[in-house]
Amino acid sequence: MTGSHTLVETEARVSHRLSHMTLDFEAMAVTHNLFRAASAVRNHLERNVLSESGLSWTAFVVLWVTWIWEPVETRVVALESGISKATLTGVLSTLEKLDFAVRTRSPEDGRRVLVTLTDAGRALMEELFPAFNLQEVDLVSHVPVENRTELATMLRQLISYTEQA
Amino acid sequence: MTGSHTLVETEARVSHRLSHMTLDFEAMAVTHNLFRAASAVRNHLERNVLSESGLSWTAFVVLWVTWIWEPVETRVVALESGISKATLTGVLSTLEKLDFAVRTRSPEDGRRVLVTLTDAGRALMEELFPAFNLQEVDLVSHVPVENRTELATMLRQLISYTEQA
DNA sequence: TTGAGATTGTTCGGGTACGAATAATATACA
DNA sequence: TGTATATTATTCGTACCCGAACAATCTCAA
Image (spheres, rainbow over the protein chains, first blue to last red):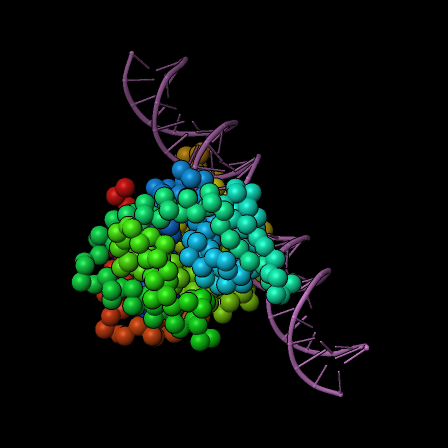
C-alpha cells in the first residue's frame, strides 16, 4: 500500500531532480503521509466493514451524517460529509434506490430538501457503526496511546488552515 | 470545510444514538480528522496549484511518481500513487492525450509497460513541484514546528497497520 | 516442449467526484 | 407590485475509482 520505495529513497530522488531548488521535505513528508494514511485507512475500512453491506465509503459517511442529524438539509450533509452538492445528489439517489434514505422537500422553504433515514437505514447504521469503530480502534493501535489526542489535534490544525481561505 | 458542527456536538449526538454501546471516541476522532484533513488539503492544493495547469490531483501524483522513477513500470506507479491498476490505465491515457507521458512496452517482458515523461511533462513538473511545495509549507504552518516530524511519524504508523494485512 | 499456473495491463460496469450552468424558489428593495 | 439579487438542489460533461473478468505473456516443472 505504501509502495516499494522508502521515504529516504524518494527524498534522494527528488533532491536529484531539483537540486537547484530549496524544498521543505518535512512539509512534503507530512502531506505525503497524510494522503497515504487516508487512502490506506479508507481502503482498509471499505474492504473489512463496508464491502459486505454493498456500501461505498462516501455512501457510508452520508448515511452516518444523516443518522446523527436527521432530519437534515442536503446542504448540511454535503458540508459535513466533505463532498460537493453535486456529488451528494448522486449519492443520495443511490441511497434512495437501496432504500436506506429518503428525500423530502422542506415545507418552509421550497428550495430546501430534507434527508431522513428509512428504518432499514437506521438498522444498518446500528449494526455497522460499532463494527466500524472496532476497526478504527485496531487502526490506531499502532499509534501510542499517549499520542492519539495530539494526533487528532494536529490533524485539526491542518484543517483549520484551509478553512480561513 | 469542517462543517457547521463541532466535534463535541457530534460526540453528544452519537452517544445519544448508541448510548447502549461502548465506543472509542478517540479512535473515531483520529480517523474522522484524518479524512477531513486529507480532503481539505487536497481540495486546497487542487484549487491553488493544480487548477491552472488543468491537472487533476491523481494525474499530478502519477506524473510526480513517474518523474522521480522513470522509466518505471505501471505496476509500480499504481502502487506508489495509491491507486488501482484499473484507475491508472485511465489516468495514463489522459496524460498521454495531454502529451505529458508516454507508454512503452518493455523489451524484456511483453506483459510489462514502462512509463516515461515527455519533455513537456518534465517541464511541467519542474515548474509545478516548487509551487506545490510552497503551498505545503503554508499548509503545515499551523502545526507547531517541533511537532511536525512526530505528525509524519504517527501517520506512518497508521499506514503500517494496513500493510501487514 | 508442452501445458498448468502466475503475473501483467486493459476492459467493463457501476458508482463517485467536481465545476459550471440551470431551474426553482425566496428575499430585498424600489 | 414588481423586479433584481441571492440561495438552493439538480443536471451535464468529463474524469476518477475500484473489483472482476479478460487476454497476453512469462515461468517452471514434468
